Image 1 (cartoon, rainbow, N blue to C red):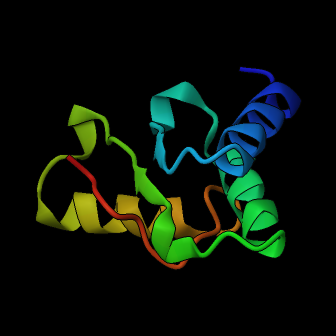
Image 2: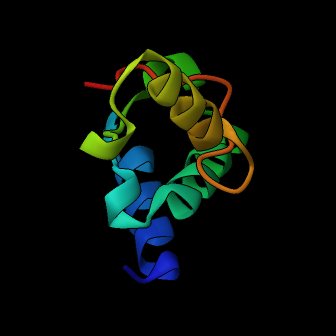
Length: 88
């Protein structure tokens, strides 16, 4: 995915009232999504209004692997958020 395109699309979606963002590590778009969410928050959208979901690869299933993967997703290199609302 093109990071600039993802960033602009997610930001525009949030500014127009969208509130559910669905990503996945496989899509390679976590960083752009995180930046767009942060910009939307800076522009006045409350983080608690945005529902963020992401998915993990089957190779990362299991409690320990899943917890480590989610912590990685929260890092500045990925989403850079304080929390993810749902990891199905």
